Length: 291
Image: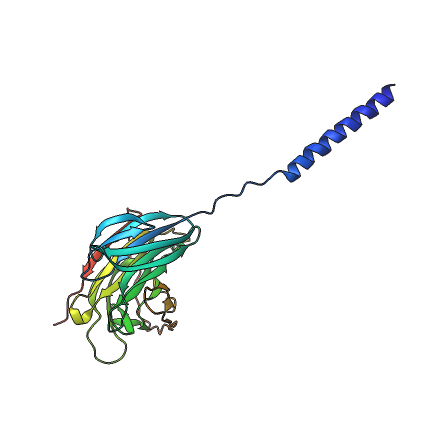
């Protein structure tokens, strides 16, 4: 009887174990909701104060030119941004956010005769930099033709079109930036402005406004980035080529080509910098026309 009893108990336990495991196999798996991202809305419409409406809700009742609104927590997927002046929609567009992205949604004017308001999305590169270094990004959103971006008087990037952005990792320090037409002797797009790039930051500079209307300026935004590695920087690394940002326009579609970066080497001594104390900050610099 003992042997039969043991066999019966073993059979029952095996059956229960099979049922339990089967239940585990067929149980539904919980699906995590897609992670969202972080966004900033930049009003680079010189001379136009707007109301900022995101997904039908007012994000800022009154945003002056040069204002940076954010950080805004955005769910993954599509969003609708509209900038209004009174009851009139100045510009509106849809844009898409992927999980974990950090982006700037910039309202500015195209370089056409009508100075058409457009919205361009620039995705922020928050990857790490080395000790004592900063990532410097310059974006051309001015009402102007393709331009050369100069750092400390040297043409560092050439033939950068409206709605394109350039990135370079530099030793932390203070830099003089200006933007001039690539071809011809037209008006300076952005007269020299001095920008401080602190260690462990992404420093974004948006050249905006219209040289013809004497409304040119620079919007500077600072975001923290991780610092890894060791060693003292002693030179400027070459930058990324001209990258056309994603453009969302409430007007006929245009195609922006990628431009190559023609880098003119220049030596810069490594400079000690301080870390930015805030997660994000922004300021507007007015360029001073040359005499």
